[in-house]
Length: 88
Image 1 (cartoon, helix red, strand yellow):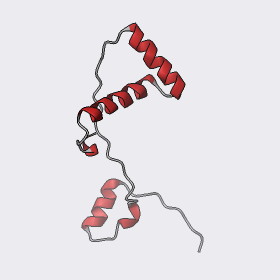
Image 2 (image 1 turned 90 degrees about the vertical axis):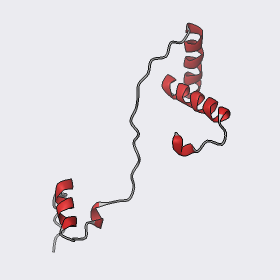
Image 3 (image 1 turned 45 degrees about the horizontal axis):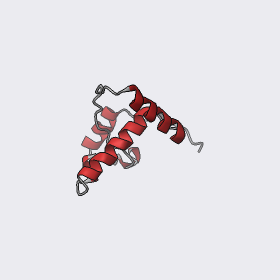
């Protein structure tokens, strides 16, 4: 018999199937990522600091934001070396 693809059920339909006791494991991959909410902040930096950040970002071929986050994480880890990485 030919393999006929059927549309995937919605989350509500899967929930109803599970409530009826049906096996819904085929709809789950167990591959997920916890997404933490992002909180945007403004930081005032001098022109010299921006220039240094931009130079480092260009050298590493990453964004300025990536450099800021990396440097901030390193500084925080240095300040609290025993802190759990799950708090990141």
